[in-house]
Structure formats: C-alpha cells, structure tokens
Length: 508
Image (cartoon, rainbow, N blue to C red; front, side, top):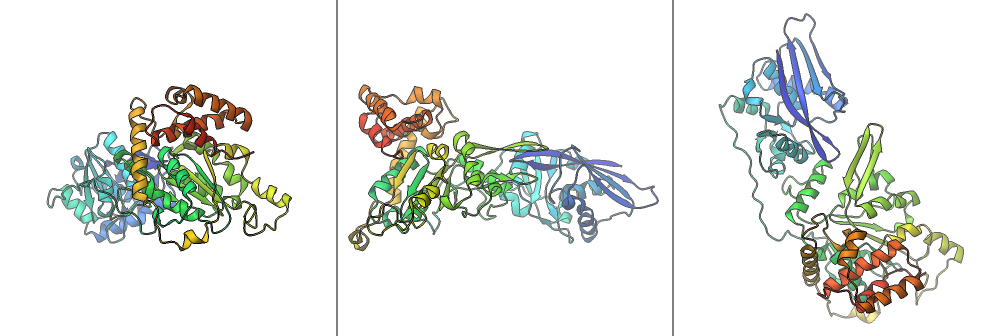
C-alpha cells in the first residue's frame, strides 16, 4: 500500500514542502527499509529511530519491505525533521492510522527511540510554507508549538509522543491547537545592556550615536584603549527604536533557522546585537557551508553588527562586508544554486588609531613608526571606509568627569527622540514600504526626499570640492543630513544640518 505524508525542508530561510511517499510491500521475502531522495546521514538514520519509536509506542512495525521516497528527489534532505512524517507514513501504509486524517496536514519532528517527539530547528518558516500551500494542520513538537503558532491561518497541533499523535488521528484523545497571544508591552532590556547615562562625558560621540540610531547609519569609532568605544557601542541597543511586529517576525524566522530561539520566548522582540570575535572566519561573518546557513550579517538583520578591534580582522573578511552594507542582502552561490539572505543591519566599527593604540593621544606618546601606522590603518580599505556614514574620534575622558556624580541623558530619553525621527521617516516613506530608515534610500529616492535650501546647496558643493568626496560619499552625506534634519523636526535640509553631516566624514 502507498501512503503520502507531507513534511517540509528549509532552503535558505524559506520552507519547501516535501512529500514523504511510503510504499509497503508485505509479500517480499527479504525485509528492508530504504529511504531515497537525496537523504543525508541524519535522514538515513531515521530508519532505526522510526522502527524503534513505533515498536516502543505499542504499535506494529511489520518486518517487511518499505521504500520511502522524499520528493522532490533533487532537493538535498538534511536533518532529523522528517522522522515524524516517515513514521506516520509507515503507519498509514500499514493501516494503523486513517488516511483521511493526514491529507490536509504537515508533520515535523525528530523521534526518540521511546516515541517522544523532539525539537527541530526552522519550524517557523516550515509552518509558514505549509500555510502558504493551503494545509490546515501542522503537527509539530510540543517544544516548538509556540514558535509555530506565530504563523496565522494554520492550526498548530503540539505533539509529545507518537502514541499521542495516533490517538489524536483516530479522534480518541484530540490535542487542542496551540495559540499564542502577543502582548504589546515594552520588552525587558537585557541585563548586560549599558545605559547612556552611565557613560561619562563623550557628548560629541553620544550625539553621533543618536544620529546613527535615528537613520540606521553605519558608525566608526576610533580612539585610544580605554576611552569607551566598546561601552558606547554596547549602549546603542538601548536607543534603537522598538521592533515592529513585522520586523520581529523577520528576525524570528532567521533565528528559527539558526536554532537560536528561546522556547520560553519564541518571538524576538528586541533588536539583535551581534559582536563576533575578530578571529571569526569569512563564512562565520557572511554565512556559508555546504548547505548555506546564516552568518553574523544575517543574524544582525534589523539590529546591530558590532566589530570590535576591526583592524585585527582578516582583510578578506572585511572586504566581504561591502555587498551587505550596500545592498542590504547577502548572496551565497554554491554548485547547487544561489541563496539570498537578508542583511539590513547597523554596522559599528571600533578600533585603535595604531598598533600601540596611542597615536594622537594628548597624554601618552605613540611608540609606532609611520610605516607601522600606515600599514595598520590600511587594513580598512577606501571603499569600505566610504560606506561608513559617521566617523568619530573618541577622546580620552578627563578625570574630573570620571570622578563626577553627574549623570547624562538616559537611553530612554534619547530613544524617544530617535523614535520621533523614525516616525517622520515612516510618514515620508508611506508610499515606499521597502524603506525602513533614511539609510535605505536609493539615488532616486535621495533626489526626491533630500531637499536642500539654496544656502545648504552651496555648502554641499564647497564640501564636495574641498574634501574630494566620491559620488557614494556625497549621497551618504545627503542621507545623513536628512536624518539630522529629522531630529531637528525640519522638512528642509538647512546649512547647519549639512555642516554637521560633513564633519562626520573622515579627514583626508
């Protein structure tokens, strides 16, 4: 008898329906259990897990011939998520579950030898694909049910054991669908987050950080050791605007595929903050592998990617950042095809001015030679520096400021101004839903939305000529000026807005 059960695969960040076709031949003399359709080792080992799980659940596994085909056959099948579908296919082919109960459903989950259903990664995009394909039910591990229930339009059935599933399919002990109530409250801030009020001095740098958050502009912090570069970067999440529900779902989908979601809080409600070590490989930053997986660029989507001691990173690793900074996506090509991952993040770079760290320091003398300084600084190429909107020198904090008890503005106060600026941008881009912030504007949109006064045009022309700005740098200054004007609640870009934006460009 032939039984067809639906499972799902993950390709990049998207689901793909897989038909698990199980053929049972009771007349064959030599027992066998064959899985075809490009299965990897984990899928091939499903034979033993399924056999033991069925028997230990009090069901029959007849010692005959089974052929399981995973269709489409040209798609590589990886991971243990097909266990539950294969087990249901075997039971359906041997008349141990009713066929009509599995027609409008997908089955996802790994099986233990005792028949319990275990967590698998990527449940959310798989259930979303099932919903798009018109299936009414999704049977998932109970541990993953809340994550799957974030997808509307499909009944998510939490399954704990294979025996419980069989009883449900026969209507003996129905399992109620899982529902998740999204509470629109302020998400708790991580305990490790730094408040801007605790950062002493550095008013100029704090202003640059506020502008960076308001328009999602890339930020570069340069300064001697101990001046507070890392502290300032780690305070940035506290002034970023809250994630919208749509952004939360985007980030949750990525973290579902990366298997980095919390079972207690499946919906990601705070912006990601990724700070990979400077020894991270190119595949770790950009993503990759034989089956491409998201890298740090994608894990930082809608959040912050902080590269501390960036000049210690490999030049090849740094250069692969060019595409995601410019295009907001990462494209990974392999022999089997290409995958595109989202990578719209705010990039923060922090580094010392020289190998010893004290070049230009007013207190401590630098011990580096000019050649050492030039070689150290050249690790950041011109094209990469050109893609950074704000370049700030972080000075040494004076002792009286460190000793003083006066606190600056809190992160919450700054974030209110940032969210007000983002609200102006959202209103401006109402006809352009793909634009989330000023930094996302293309050249045509810059011409439409970055309106300069006659005086600010003159200053911009003078700045371009004297600073020899490239076309890319020119457009980035315009976008930065637009953000500064938004913080000032101005519809036009005035001279003072352009002047402030220009001073954040690196000096030649």
